[in-house]
Image (cartoon, rainbow, N blue to C red; front, side, top):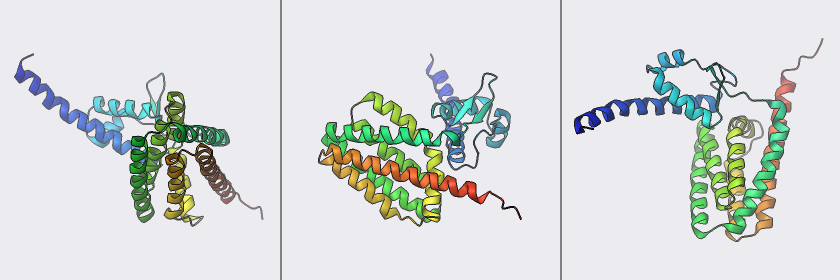
Length: 245
């Protein structure tokens, strides 16, 4: 291929990739923050008008979002924000507990020194993002920091099956964590320091290779999330009930 032709194609491809990335980032933010609620349609034409882009970068962005489980494309090629079935929440929370215990226990047994260093790096990043979320009321930094922290621990466990399943669980739970975080800080009066302490204790158990303690802390962490989220759901349902006069 002639050099001039290749350069011209790169110039054309560059903006399209930038456009696709922008669409992906903005839609992802809107989905995780519930600006775009579950099951809402995502029309390619409408999105094209919103972002002033052709269908190609829009479709690329939607493919990336589908890979993360945030959107669903039906057989007729219509796309919607992935539904949230709150009826399955108890099952989800049980699965989270089991996989969190398994991954964190494996990490304590199998971790390398490099793993510890990288886990500690993600912990520092999480703490900064958690504080940012607490200060601004935007819970997405906390959600991303939490995802990166726990997923890096799972990777240290050296079990590819645990990693794959735990990754899916973490991804499915991000929108739940948005509700949980808002409820935790606004209604229950929790603090960033309280959350940080739980994570620091996990890292220390993994660092000294105390598998039983790492599993216990992972279980406690999952159970706390379960209790808080179920309380959130109960309060939300109760607040919508009308008392007959």
